[in-house]
Image 1 (cartoon, rainbow, N blue to C red):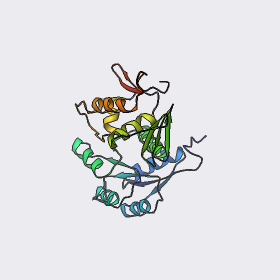
Image 2 (cartoon, rainbow, N blue to C red):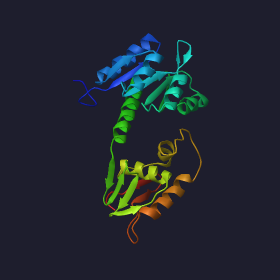
Image 3 (cartoon, one colour):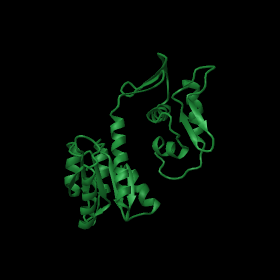
Image 4 (cartoon, rainbow, N blue to C red):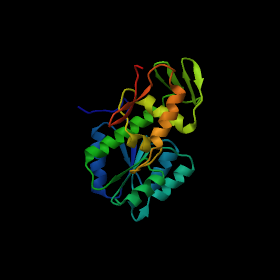
Length: 232
């Protein structure tokens, strides 16, 4: 029985010049219910521009051409299709280059197909989350269209980073969130970094969203991180 991620299959555009690898990736993802379309760099760019792809999986070097050039061009045009970069170039510098060019994730070869599938599913889940327009936990509500936050009907003014931080917590209520997760998802740091920036922003956010005399919505989990307490 096929394990489909959605009732309607999503199309994934795959840019890969190694035929054996392309066939293996295509077979694995199609067994999960996705539609996989093999494409050249130019064909993938066209598909992204017209919205024919839910996401792209893109090898770094395709027939000697660096596909990051195309990816950078797409991002400058405002094309936001999620992109998973796969590559045998595994140094930290190369990963950073791929992410800075506009990649949403970077997976180095060789990799297990189960990891590729997990990353694809995670990226598409995030895409579905982005389509949500309102988030609510208890009496705290965030409107993603209006970029506004209210608690018990009272508007709360947040700075852009505070807004993104609270949004992440609202998308994961009752789940332990580590500092590393916040640095990657909110600050876009895809590498280790010793800093107290997360704690400072959470402290400022608490001052704005908490009700005086009541438990904080964002609680500390000793030795682990933080959690948005949906029952506060």
